[in-house]
Image (tube, rainbow, N blue to C red; front, top):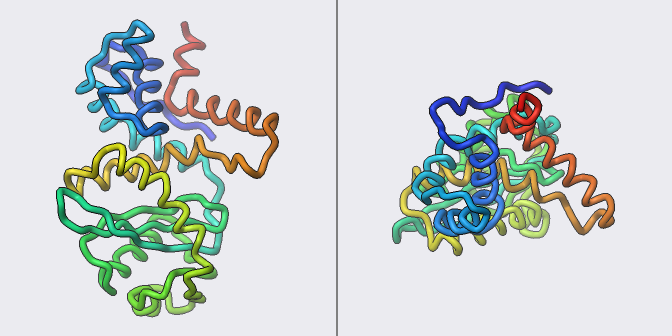
Length: 239
């Protein structure tokens, strides 16, 4: 699949430095200052504020390009919501994954009632363009009420034991939340998590299911895809 590389016009640092900083920040539980320190160890002087602007500008672009390369989403959706604290206030992070663990969408909202569930369902349908065959949730009643309104023909299964896939998908977010000492605003949390859910899973193949040799081969392919969508491969070819 061909995709246009993002424009780096006006940036004095090469694409290799920019994409590497964005990769470090979204792949590992690092702060902007820690990424700055890692780059300094390599002899590259760049401020943490510059890294923050790069992540804000290119993170979502990279995530979107990676999502376009994913196979079509599965027909079985797992949905779950967890609370997160943003600037001291309780908010809810809604997440949907398919049966293969691919993240279909995340949404930060201040409620978990029928209206919030309906908003999330409509957002998922707009993004995937295809309704699922089955939706698996916990026993929150808001899911059933919203599903009957938005997707009445879709089978709904409710059980706290069937939804481990969605619950496990929250773990990397929890790790980042602790490393970042919480989120400062709803908009900032939504922007970060939207990019994070597109970039981080790309570098997290299910390691326990493959041998070490196959894992290294898979990661080599994934790094090549990253270089392609960020434009690193193109810049190396023209150098």
